[in-house]
Image (cartoon, rainbow over all chains, first blue to last red; front, side, top):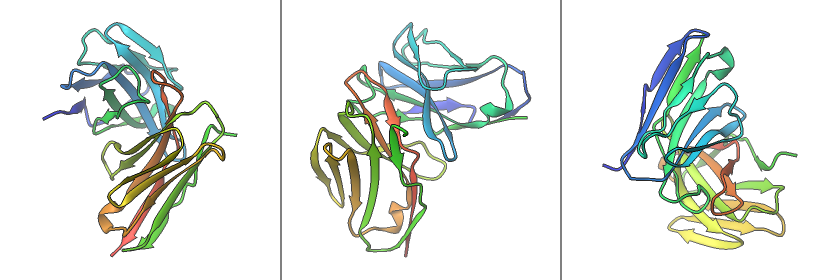
Amino acid sequence: EAQVTQNPRYLITVTGKKLTVTCSQNMNHEYMSWYRQDPGLGLRQIYYSMNVEVTDKGDVPEGYKVSRKEKRNFPLILESPSPNQTSLYFCASSPLRGASTDTQYFGPGTRLTVL
Amino acid sequence: QKEVEQDPGPLSVPEGAIVSLNCTYSNSAFQYFMWYRQYSRKGPELLMYTYSSGNKEDGRFTAQVDKSSKYISLFIRDSQPSDSATYLCAMGRGANSKLTFGKGITLSVRP
């Protein structure tokens, strides 16, 4: 089944404890992206990647890191999480190089709480 | 002014009603317009996609883009309880550009 998977789906952690949220897609997509979704603010892009070893900042990259060593994986790293990073996170992938011209396939989301 | 504005709702309608969802935008460079639907506890999924101005119809759904007014709409005819979800508009400038999303509106269709 073609899909985007994220792990973990739920995570409660404490301030400053490094964490990684994994994202994997099995559709051989070039474009991958991370978003956070907050009430009243909608979906905001954190980072995106056009291809392996190519990543770029989105609208709200502060406090996050990403890497794209393999085409299928695009992990999101929070080196020192803070309470303002409590949010619902979505990974997405798209077959083409851009998000505008083709559908993005979203993962199921990761609900992160930072205490 | 935010780049993309979407009425926050929520919106509640009876089954069978015609629903109109709208977004306005300020950036005239946007050329690609999308509507995503997000069910509770799920990721968004693409519902409609339109390039430039005009209408596009898919079953009970019609997407409309008016670039002169910087206004896009999604119409849902004969709404069903299964249409109850959050609807997000999204826009992009070019083929390799990112999408800018509206905040989303939650629709509830009452049986």
